[in-house]
Image 1: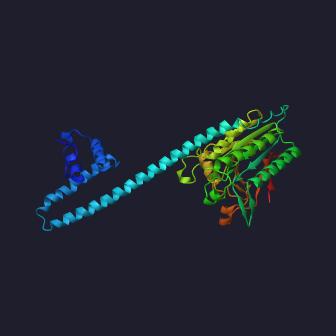
Image 2: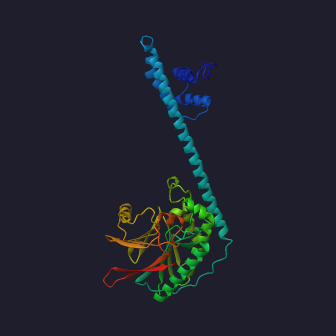
Image 3: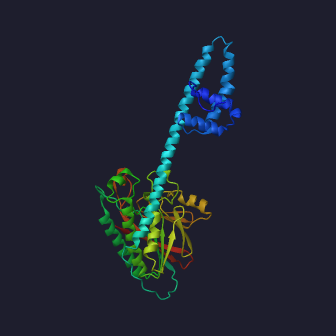
Length: 402
């Protein structure tokens, strides 16, 4: 018996014959599918061919047998033709879907490989950067009843905007960050803080998630990241020179996504801003008074003066219901949630939870201007201080940039 297609044999006849004679030919369903795919230059699963055979065997074959006695035999042929056309259409749709899936998977692999390459390049280039001077050693200091939280978010390094609502570029971004640093250092000096929490809440780079971002960006995502990392290195090191105990937190934002399409990203790991904390750890390895806290699943949990704190970007934790959802996931109710993302200043209490929203370093760009949202550029520093009555007093200082 012959397992290969005979001369003049239609594909349907060949398929039917293989299943009819599979025991004599010693073929499994998968082997039959391999033969049919090879013959038809396709990659269908064996279940497709097997089900087609079963439909023919259980439905159409009995109808063909009845056709000899039917008064209108052509009706069966017409019906068979319609069903075959439907099946062909369905097969074409399945083929296109599989091709699209393979294309997207290859694209995802390309992006993932690129991300690993970028990470390796960044680490190899850090050694070429100027050495950060060894910081001074601090005498042992008593624990204070106050701590300072410095929020940093939505700097959008690399984005350019020149419109009705303002102007922004890399030069202006650097000026604003350094002005903010001077204000923070002044706050530390005036109030004598010896414990400071530096929280980067994401979207430090402009990235490429919006078409307007891609068009208006003066630097690509990797260059944006390097500029951001060095600005943060400068910021953190200057604070660590005058403060005995510094904690650094970094969460990823949506603008740092490796792939612009949100649904195509498998996790928060595929984000350029995951590299920030690694860069800072490598550059500031000489600073023994800095503790680094990397985000997990888009948030960082912390403890400030005994209060439970969550730092997040804000794209996944909406102001109205973010505290409820986080409490369900964390199995406890955080007392403080600090987020950015929405580009305006906001604060509200939800039960025992206080949500504080940091404004943006950029203010307006083309995207926010077209959507009529956003606000003045600025950042917040928050002081926690123990109350004599046992609670925590907090004061927010808004540093405006324009």
